Structures are given as C-alpha cells and as structure tokens.
Length: 574
Image (cartoon, rainbow, N blue to C red):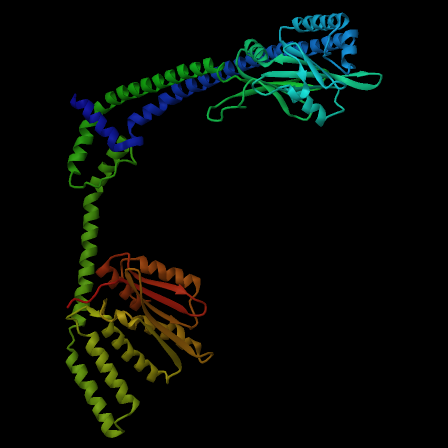
C-alpha cells in the first residue's frame, strides 16, 4: 500500500475522533447524510401510512361483503323455516303420535311425499344446507333428509341438548361435533300456544370456511359469537400465532336479527411487506451514502495530510522515547502547536526543576547534619541524672522513672540502622511512651488497648504511633481542661490484605475547616514546616515505603478524632 495512505491511516488512528478525517466526516454527514436520512424516513412514513390506510379501507369493504353473505345465508334459513312451519303436512306430522305406522296408508304416503318435497325445496334453495331435521315433541321422532330415527337413536343431538338447557329459546344456533362438521340453525315450532317441535337447518361449515377464505384478501380469522360472547363458529382453531409479529385489524357487525356477531381479524403485516421492501431499499441507499461520505472524507484528509505529514513525523520521532504520549484528545494542528510550545518552554522548566531538587537536597543535608549530634552523650547524661535522683531522693520516684523511659525511647528513636520493625516492638515502644505520658498527666486519662496479638510478627515502619498519640494529647486531651476525663483507644487489626492502626480520642475534636486543610496537606508531596509535622511525616514515610494507596486518614468522630494508618500486611522474614 502507498506510504502516504499508510501515514494517513496512522494519523487517523492516533487522533481518533479529533482527527481531520473525522472533522470532514462530520461535516459531510451534516450536509449530506443527515438530510438524506430524514428525507428517507419521511418518504417511508408517508408511503407506509398511505398503504396501510388503503389496505384497511379495502379490508373493511371486504368484511362488509362477507358479513352480508353470512347474514343472507342465515336469514334465508329463517325464510325456509317459515315456509316449513306453515306447511299443513309438516304441522300435522309434528302432532302425530305414531310417526311410522306399521301399515302405511295411501294418505300417509301422500303426506310423506309432500313433506319430502317441501324439505327438498328448502334444502336446495341454499347451497350451504347439508340437511334438515324435523323433531316432534309428541312422537319423540326426528325426521331427517339424511335418515330418520327416534331421538334416542339419533347421532346428532347437540341442538336438542341446547333446547333442554335453554327451553325458552325460540331461535338459536349450535355447532355439531367434528364428525358432523355443521352449524345447526334451530327454530322452535308452536301450535295453539304449545311447543310442537324443532326444525333444524344444518349448514356445512366447510362451505362457510371456503366462503370466508375466498372473500378475504389477507390472512384472517372469521368467527361468530352469541350475545354472551361464546364462539359458535371459527374459520381457524387457534386465535393467533404469538411467535410471529402480526399487525391485526378487527371488524365486527351484528347479523341474524342482531342475535349474533360476526367478527373478522385481518393480519395486514403480509400485505405491508411491500413497504418493508421499500424500507430495505432506503436502508441500502443510506449505507451507500455513508460509504460515499467516508471515501470523500478519506480523500480530503489525504490531501490535507500531505502538507503536514513531515512536521508530525518529526514530532513523533522526537517523542519516540515517550510511549505514553497522548494524541487522542487533540487534532493534528493542536498537536503540532502544543509540541512547539513544549519545546520552547522545556529548557526553562528543566532549570526550575533542577533548582527545586537542589533546594530539597540542601534541606535533606541540613537535617542529616542535625541528626549527627552524638546521642551517647545525651543517653549518658540522662542516666547520670536518673542515678543522682535515686541516690538523692529515693529509688522509686517519678522523675527517675520518666528519665529512664525517656532514655529508652531516645535509644530506639535515634537508632537509624533499621527503619522497619515488627508490630510487637512498635507496641512495646508505644507502651513506654504512654507510660511516660501517664506520669506527666497524673493518670488523668483512660487508655484502652485493642491489639490482635496474631499480628505481632507482621512488619511496620518504626515510630508511627507515637506522633499520632502526641497529637491526641496536644490537640485533643489537654484542651479539655478537666471538663471530662480523657479517653484514648489504640487498635491494631487486620482488614483483608491490610493492617490498620487506629488511634481514637474523646478530645475537643477538629472543625470541618481544619479537617479539610489537613486532608489537603496529606495529599501534598511536600512536608510542612509548622503544623501537623508528625502526622504528615508518618503519612509521607508510609507512602514512600509502600506506595500512595497507603497512609493516614483523619476522621472527625464528634467528640474527638480518629486517625487510621493503613499499611500492607507483610510477615516478618525469619
């Protein structure tokens, strides 16, 4: 691949969204892509809504036609019922006690002939009637165009069961079992105020389903419900397939003297699939526009980078020893400008840093010289004073004890051979210090130790508790001025992979302003020369040894203050 193209791609990779390429791409998107997308959405929305409106209107008209055909089929059976119920031969048959005489006469044969004729006419007048039943309450006999029997021997009795359950119903529809596959349109006949029988017109449900399917232009389901909402006919067994995404429209209309309701559910998602194809085409055009925008932006970026590639390459070569150089938040011009300014200020900054380091070195040398004062003279003098006091006053006097403890503390604190000790030694040193403070304050405070002795063999920096305790006396316990007895608790516990030293007092506490100031000092990398020297010294020593995630934390407990020291849990070697 061409070197210029490779350089262009490397610049884009380094500067990401701030690069010139993305600048051009955003510009092209605003000028071309966004308007095209909005226009495509508008066109698709208008087309989709118009198509849906036309489809729904056509389906509604189709439903009206289907409902009218169903209503005509059911209404025609009522006309045939009136024809049959007014027929003299059928009326006489319904009140006969013996529907099938042992020796049929010529008049009986004539009556049966007339009945068959009228039933054949009624059946043939509709292409949807399978058969007709005439049931007589008097004889308990069913005369059928498909075979006559007494009711007890008749196979299809669903229409009679409904009458038994609803004796007052004069006109109703039932559905026979699947073996018959027919709707039963039933009419109760009367004579002189008495029920004489039931005339049943059996409608072929397969024909009805073909009628509904043939008149519907979309996936649909047609059903007929009674006034109670019970479904007595449906063109499909399942109402809908929940696994498919469908857009359903439902139309309803009363039929058959408003006794029943026909409802059709249309799934227009299939009919709207053509609009989905239009959406796919628009989406492909949008993808094409995006690709075109990217190519144009790349070309414009390539022309731009040819003029500045030499400058940027020189800057990268100069900074090759700085792998963490950050270019993702800058564009190329900002990157060049910043580096030129950086080079012009670098010498001055180096001089300032060197002067600051020399000042720190001089300060450290001064402190080191101060600590070179020979401590043996001080120890010998203190011991001599202690012996003199014991010889002059008594062996067990507080002054001698204080001098002895002070000598021991100085021996440990001025021993610079090791800066790491174990927790046992630190606690022993702290105990001597607290004994000294107890003598000084005439035992006017309570001391509580909460030490996990299992931690004695873990390591800790030397002398981290004594400066904290000294602050507790100076800033917390002493200012109480006998208003209440002071209390100090020293705790050493293990928390996960850390050891936490805690010093708590019930002193006067610390204000929020001073606490905020102290927290700022603890975050600084320099040691203060006036306030909080001991606390900051402990904090800085721990951070120098273990890292910045460890150190001291000050908490206002109202009353009093708690200082926590966190160090990593490390066992003493050997």
